[in-house]
Length: 299
Image (cartoon, rainbow, N blue to C red):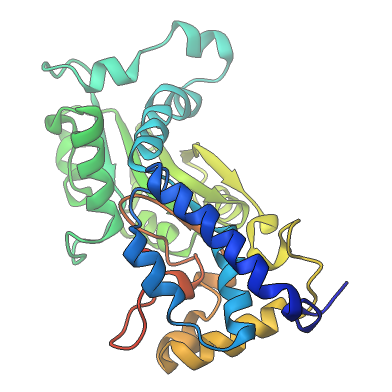
């Protein structure tokens, strides 16, 4: 174990290498939601040597999904995760419905509907509507297969027997659990419910499986506590890294956000960002924005 203070002498060279790496990711459109100006402005937030060291660590740790990568993840959600939620064994999956083909067809031929995980008061900028738009725009999903959650009962009455809930990130599971409880899905024992988040933390998976036994959860990607910046294989040996992070975060982000989620929603301290948005379970120093602080990625 070591202290971040022991690394300060090497920090300028390290920060330069990480910046060059980031510039390459941007130039090659691997990080296509971040511009060179975004990178320069974000790095410009940090003034002290220890802050610049932290910024370099954050930059090296960032996992930014491009638009093409996100489209691939969406495709996997329908081709792999949904069949895994619907069927019980590999043979059934192999012989079952090609959901990507069905859901992109012009004709409505299956009693299935796709439902974004949102609340009826959420604005259209929230992740649920955003994910729905991406499924339509990038995969060509027939919008007649998509409904809002408050229409579930109406569609059950019309003979729909399967509903697929789409989401970008399942973090602690609290918001998703509240959503499923709100719509009283347990009133429909004969209906098949699938939940397909693009990314799911093991804490959230555990909660949904315990509290909503009637919902089949099948994420595209699964992560655990090792995905926290402070538990990562690369940086867990810096024993006071979280102390440094909190010191810098307290300086730059507002008191309300710092008190609620200084290290991200439910303290998950993730380093993920997607082309369309960044989950609030990712560290706020990536996405926080104010008159005096420039974000690297957008919420």
